[in-house]
Image 1 (cartoon, rainbow, N blue to C red):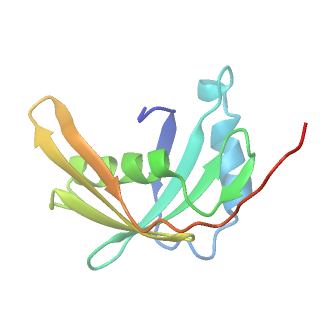
Image 2 (cartoon, rainbow, N blue to C red):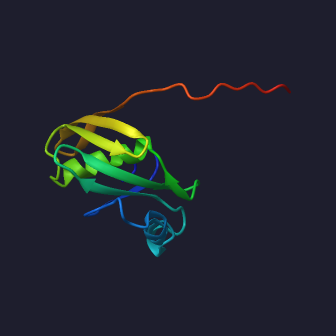
Length: 127
């Protein structure tokens, strides 16, 4: 799924115990994606949300959260019928987010990613 950048979403029984980097690299560098690479998101269904862990190309490692990955995972979870609601709650390592959308016959529109924002750094560079 392309939500601004390419993502593969994989449903797993338990994402907490997997070797994410090893499994993700098999997909990210696999023959199908070898030219451009892809981000890889592993999700686990919970009672009222999905949990996600993300491997980002470019970073080449796991990240705490990825907005386009969370969005892709929520859309896939709804499209597959795993989550029926038009708002999907997502728990990433970096925090809790929500993706809302309007599902149409031929796709998804009015897609919004929401969550908390926190100021974490201020810097200055003298040139």
